[in-house]
Image 1: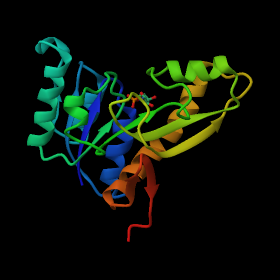
Image 2: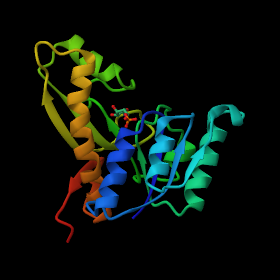
Image 3: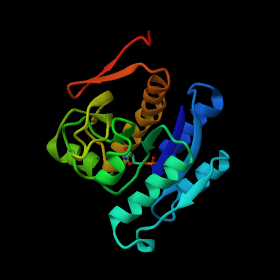
Image 4: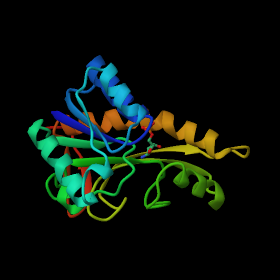
Amino acid sequence: MRLGLLASGRGSNADAILRAIDDGRLEAEACLLICDRPAEALAVAERHGVPVRLMTRAEYPDRTAQQAAMREALVEAGVELVALAGFAAVLEPVMVDAFAERILNIHPSLLPAFAGTVAPEPQAAALRAGVKLAGCTVHVVTNEVDAGPIVAQAAVPVLPDDTVASLAARILVEEHRLYPQVLSWFAQGRVRIVDGIAHVGDGR
Ligand code: GRF
């Protein structure tokens, strides 16, 4: 599976995915990582020998043009599946429709709770709501933000003394386990989406 990554931040999920590829746990080739801002994720990808592109919003007339250029770069690199790994911008139809059902995102909440914002706001919202379980969700990206088919989730307890940082750190451990696992299911052709619901089969 030829994988593309989009990132905007520190790149710890990108690192977890690329480590899984390096270790042979994920049968994929990381073809390109694109950042929309100068971010640590660029150095993470370079450490793994993955080609990178920096394509900032300021270089294009609008976000649609920026994402159209990103799409072209992904297509040129022969990317089959795109993983958003801490990508902070909402994807435009120009990207989503070109890779329909082939873009995944990880969100640091148990969706559909606390959708529509980026880290650390979902974790902060979980604390404010007083929920006793928090977690992360890997979902297929559609044109509705954080609302595409849920492929997998992992839950963690919310502890009485939690801060946003301590809860986010507990969730992040699960993110780093879950995202490579879900990508390996895609690489094995085990995920089917029927009527907006993702089903994970045994690969036969
Ligand atoms: C993670 O919390 C992820 O769930 C969210 O953004 C954050 C990215 O962190 N989408 P990193 O850049 O992968 O370290």
